[in-house]
Image (cartoon, rainbow, N blue to C red; front, side, top):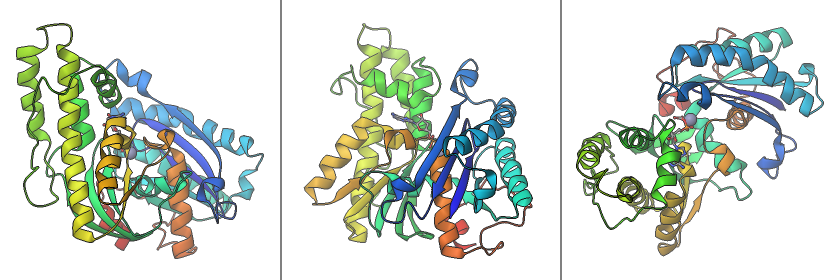
Length: 351
Ligand code: KG4
Ligand code: ZN
């Protein structure tokens, strides 16, 4: 099965081709072409994503990038067996672009259009790495909009173990970065600055660290960061880097503690980390060390597949197709491209 994946939920237009026959033994080998257009340069000027501009930019790129990946693979559209697009969650206008383009192409070609849950794409993306995890595993999903721990038994078999009751971890990185005067997207900028900082100088709160459950809360952190920035940022040449390091350590500490606690509770030995924040090197270093102490293993997506991309949507679409066959209802499709800007992954899997 040859699946075209279209990701347009936020600020990246990602398109990819996944061939499930070629990926049968090693999923990464099924990824035969991919292209990504990032809107970072466009939104940077405004300090964050401007939804209307995002939609318009997706419109400009979705068809040319689709042509590009087909050319890359030397294939004609008629070779496609299905088209997967991100159905939600995300920005409504941005989602509509991928849904409309994907459904229109699928209708014209007479093939299924599959509405994929964006977080399912992230969750399955480590399977596209050189060292893919086996099921079952605990998944830590850490993106700009979500922080969730899931018990994953297989494709479509997800149980929520805990999540953030307010801001996501990525949001905490982004908001703290903004307070430090760093550009958008803040996570990578803050992480870069933190590398030259000292973790010993400032101590920030670790929200919910001892809550005894797998719930996260990051909204209080930004108030503490604001106070610290006001009091200390201009004190000396190291202060901003030291604050960045303190922010990173606080977020990472909580993510590591709750992930290890999820492994303990479930008795599982594999932890999968996915979503934009999984690119964070300090998080990887700390998780690897903590998991090793328990004899557990941690799996990540390749760096290029941590943030939004078309490959994870093509792959998730191919997995859904394998699971549900061509049944239009089961694959969330009737060419009506009903998008779901707010959509819960556990509900989506049960749909
Ligand atoms: O998964 P993603 O690309 O988009 C959403 O689905 O939200 O995640 C984007 C988030 C942003 O909050 C961004 O700042 C964060 O991931 N991020 C990072 C790093 N790279 C991306 N946060 C910390 N360290 C990084 N290296
Ligand atoms: Zn994402």
